[in-house]
Length: 73
Image (tube, rainbow, N blue to C red; front, side, top):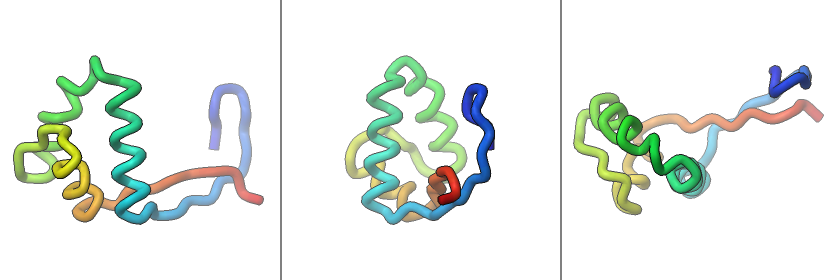
């Protein structure tokens, strides 16, 4: 995996629903300007209208895999 100028062997894990909701909410909170793009894309991907509400964040977390990457220990 490469982050910036750092290369390292990575491992992955699938996030549970609660972790996925937290990650999605954090991403949307840090990138409010991109919500205009994320919401229509997620709506198309999920097959239903995603509006960014707490309830709607739980649904894709149950419907799609959310994967975390990190350095191998």
